[in-house]
Amino acid sequence: MRGVTAIRSSAVSREQLSQILGDYLALDRARRFRRLLLKRFGLLTLGAIAIAIGITGESASVRWALVALFAAPPVLASIAELRLERRLSRRCDGIDVAARHNT
Image 1 (tube, rainbow, N blue to C red):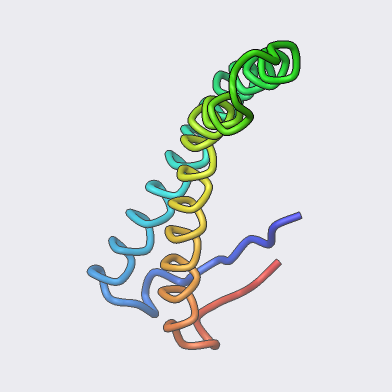
Image 2 (image 1 turned 60 degrees about the horizontal axis):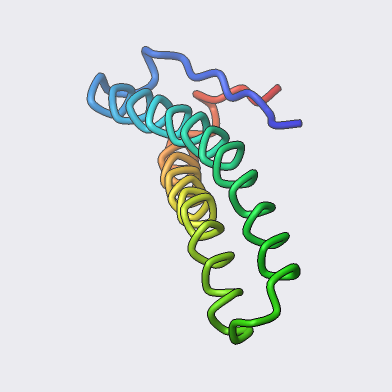
């Protein structure tokens, strides 16, 4: 389970607080978008795997390239989410420890 960080708004500048909230909202949007992609492209990927296993007339590289194409969007969305999570973490680490309260 992820921890929650509480920040006293008087301990940070308005600009820092605005950047932290913006990063948090961007991370939340990225998580929702990744979950949506995972649901939709996951089903397509499973179908492509079934087709790749069932059809033997084509070369293996052609069959598995289709699987990779359907699996790529959720993987790229996960990478973007990790990048946003690290950026938010760096911003929160830059705040004075006395101003934070982790729960």
